[in-house]
Every structure is written in structure tokens, then in C-alpha cells.
Image 1 (cartoon, rainbow, N blue to C red):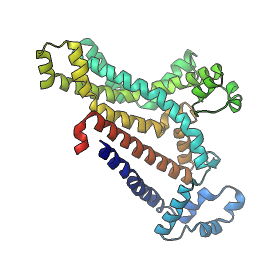
Image 2: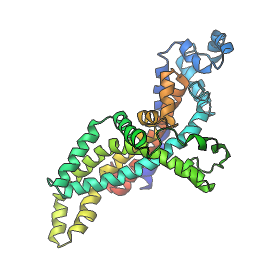
Image 3: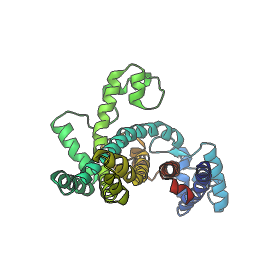
Image 4: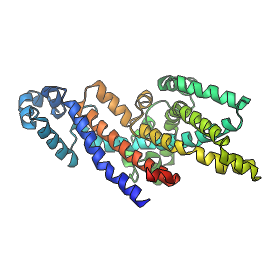
Length: 340
């Protein structure tokens, strides 16, 4: 098992190097003037465009430019983001914890609910509850996240007035955020640790609609896969053998069938977390949630090259790290994977 983990960890820097070459290489399709835009922070600097191009070596050969970019990146300099009016690294440090908070609130219910509903659907195959769940899965597949988000806003915010519609906290509590001592970067947790339960509750209420939108849209595929895996496991030889030994249905279903059906859910869970941590672009934009997703949408609209490039690298890091963790977990669950 140790050799398996070491092999996976060694792959991380190699994969990151290849991805960074590809990402930076794509920027070479832009003109030097376009690539100089991230370094311009004022009208005075805009008037010295050619000087900036020369200083930054934007007409140098690609290997030279890549080496310079890699050196700056390793020093924590990813450029200046016009969309956030601050450095890219500072923007990521500020917004990533917010997206992480939304990810935690969303991913755990999605995985638990999807596994339970998928199992329930398989155990009651072709019965009423199975038919209802299959219809809901199709709806989840069919409805885009922006449609679900707008419907939830219209019902629970505009019509019923039960939940807040946008932002991370209400306007009144925004002014109190600067007085909070930050420990984790997660607003709900930090507010609770500061004894500001009103802010913690307010932040949690603002997470409900975005999290529900993502739950409805993203849980459909996991429910379907769990149902199919469970049906396959229930007809397998080892399950029939367990029943022949006189084991109860509960033990057979939970210990034998569902445990094996969960193997592919580990992979799906990894992809789910990657997507959420990378920023749920549409959902964060609809609910004006100030996470990574909303920032990169604004950056893309404003052709903010430094922000887009920084987001691409952030996404690459998340994909590589989470994929490695998933591979290791898969190896722990299924020993056969270690020998592949």
C-alpha cells in the first residue's frame, strides 16, 4: 500500500508541470499587447504599453517566457486581477474559503442522500417509489442549474420571503465582518467561534438556496449510478451465496451488496468535489455568492487574462490533488487497484 501511495504522490509534480505547460502555451495564441493587459493597473501604465511588453519580455521565445512565469508563480505572483481589483493570489485566498464552505454544505448532503435514494430505488425496483425516484432523476438531468436557481429564488425569496436571495450575509451584517477574528476562513465557523451566532445563522441561511440548487442538479447522476450498481450487486453470485447461508436481508443488502456498489461512488464523489471546489460558476453568479466561481465569470467577461490563468492553475491543482486522494481511497477500498 505504501508503494501505491508513493507512486501516486510522485505523479503530482509531473502532471502539474505538463498542465502548466499546456495552460501557459494556450496564452501564446494572444498578442503581446493582450498578454500585457494583466500588468496594467492605471491609465498611466496603459500609456507605456510597449515599455511594459519589453520589460516583461512578452516577445521572447516561449521557453524563456514559461521559465519566467514559472519562477513568478513559485514565488506566489500570478499577476493582477482587474475583476477583483487586487492580486490574483490575494483574490484566491479571499474567495476560495467561501467556495469551500459552499462545497462542504453541498457535497455531504449530496453524497449521503444520493447513496440512500439509489439504494432505496434498487431495493424497490419497479415499485412506486422506484418510479417516482427515476422521474426525479430525469428531471434533475434535464433542468439546467440556472433554471433551478431562478425557480428557487422566485419561490423562496421573492414569493414566500423565507430565505435571503443573494450574497454571503445580509447588508447589515456585512459591516460587522471586519471585526471577526478569522480562524478557519469559513464564515459560519468563524462567526460561531467569535460568539456571533447571528452572523453564523445569517451566513448559513444564505447557503441554503445555492446548496439546494446544486443538490437537485448534481445528485441525479449519483443516484442513477448507485441504483444501477446496487441492482448489479443484488444479482451477483456473492449476494446469492450470502442469502443461501441464511443471512438476513439487512445484512446482505448493507454489508455485501451496498459496500461493493459504493466503489464507483468514490470516483463520482471525487469529481463532485472537484467541480464544487473549482467554483460552481452559474450557481454562484445567480445567487451573487462571492466565491471563486463568481469571480472567474466576471474575469472572463472582462477578458481578465491574469485571473483566468490563475483560475486555470487553481483548477489544475484541485483536480490533481483530489484525483490522487480518490486513487488512494480506491486502493484502500479495493486492494486489486494497487496492483494495476
